[in-house]
Amino acid sequence: MRAAIGDVYGLNPDRIICGAGSDEILSLIAYAYLGAGDEAIYSEHGFLVYDIAIRAAGAVPVIAPEQDLTTDVDAILARVTAKTKMVFIANPNNPTGTYLPFEEVRRLHAGLPAHVLLVLDAAYGEYVRRNDYESGLELAATADNVIMTRTFSKVYGLANLRLGWGFGPAHVIDALNRIRGPFNVSGVAIAAGVAAVKDRDFLSRAVEHNDKWLPWVTSELEALGLKVTPSVGNFVLVHFPDEQGKRAVDADAYLLDNGCVLRLVGNYGLPNALRMSIGTEDANRTVVGLLKSFLGQA
Ligand SMILES: *Cc1c(COP(=O)(O)O)cnc(C)c1O
Image (cartoon, rainbow, N blue to C red; front, side):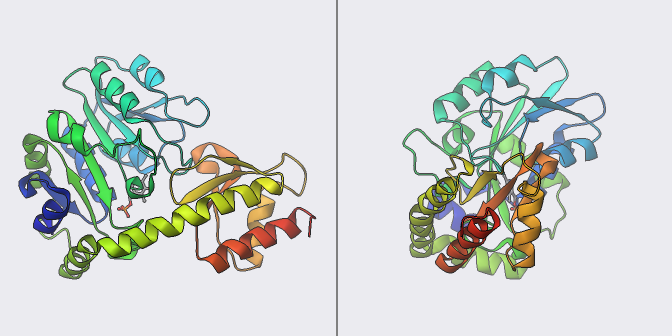
């Protein structure tokens, strides 16, 4: 698996670690480097596995507020203390769909003390079509305190197989290898992962599908009067009116009744929004049509 990834991305396989989903890699990072008395920072609406991993390792999560539902580098840097050991960034972030341009990631890295590990989670990196975006490969290749994580769960659609990977400095990968279970990734997952990572054609088609339907879903929902956070991932965060019967919980119940599963994101501090994945043409049209009737516009 590591050889296949190294081949495709031009990386040294010795500096790659595979896990049962990137969630396992994120947990291993926390267990390896965090303990009682330590602090780790993540962003206000950041991916919640960071909070779980930080707490499970016995450390204290420190939450940096966001600007416009986007990670705020200055807010993170302002929260670095003598106890800070780690910073987690999902770029792009789930569930907001927003991203940090690479210059901002660099500025964050430059502002961190050398002993703070910067974890760049690029679970949706393949989808991003912005010239100022970089997944973190370059920083993880050159800096001593940066690790990047990737997953087969999103663009490859293999979430149920549980396969993810990390790329970082040799000393970090060595530490993670010492504490991971010896058989953490199954043979079936490896076989599928090797085939998937080599299938560049599938990747292009998946990304092209998103290129077409992400703007379509966004503009259709906006035409219904809903606010949609601009996304560079394969999902959108949809905000509902603060009106009796028209809130996100009501929309969610209505959609579920009609066979469509979106995601309430109250746990992420977004009580009146739903996250909607970009689906097949049929699924996208169905959800837009249902929301139209829900809002009384059909
Ligand atoms: C889905 C996701 C992951 C991890 O997924 P795995 O299935 O564990 O690989 C990590 N980070 C973000 C931001 C995600 O959305």
